[in-house]
Length: 101
Image (cartoon, rainbow, N blue to C red; front, side):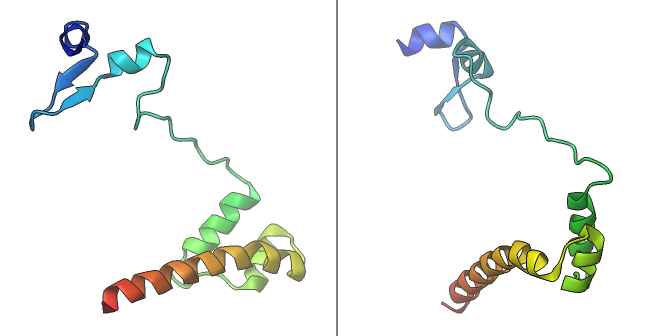
């Protein structure tokens, strides 16, 4: 069976001797080849673009700046930003714990 797949160009051997599924096999199955998904371009002039630009600054962004850029009220800005902060703190905590071990 492997010889048949290799003859059809659906598997090939990599440098380490392992068999690798080829793009031909993915196409035959109607699947997208992993790692070839097109990157979606950001839309220009959106709130998302403005917020990302603010947050990527070295000094970050305050809630007031976020509120102004997105035209959000304080309670909405807090509710949108807090989940991101919690995830980042959890990640940073895990990273610190791994680093101290």
